Length: 189
Image (tube, rainbow, N blue to C red; front, side, top):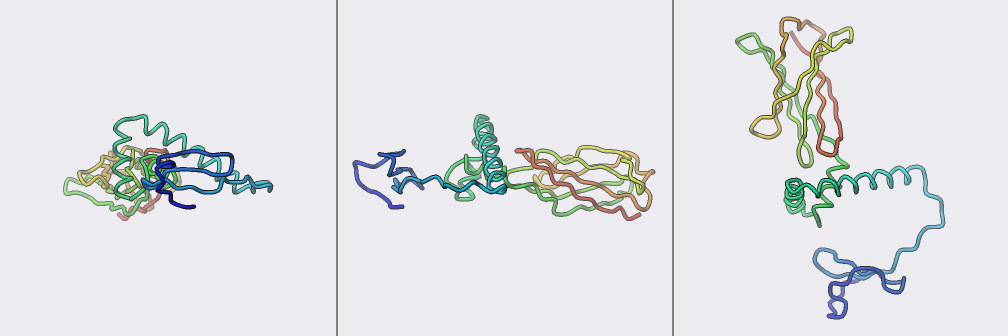
């Protein structure tokens, strides 16, 4: 791949004669040999990755049609030094939210509060917190409320009297592309 500064090729994009490809990269015109398709059959992993990238491209197209998301992805691209908002949206598609920490505490009023710190490449769309009894059934489920720091989600247990030893809290985080992460934490009475 070579950079070109010629006035004749400045701003060119596309294939010329089936042998050269011109494209813009970081504000400069570059030229490279046209890619040659492989004669080998793609592996199962390659087929899966191509499908994931196809879905990521479709997500980026949908996301960038939303004016607010387009601005968010443009700002993210600038902050992460990515070439475009599309690249930022695709990168977001490939990253799941992370549940960094959870704290379960009892307030003076007796209410049990679950606080979870959840981060994502751009932002987390929702956090659901479920109380699960030791023998398996879900006791209650509710949506976390996002705090001012944009990463702490809080949920107040509705039936704190029913919490006994062995109960766990399952935290499920979903980001804008739809990636889901789930993590469980044990409740200590």
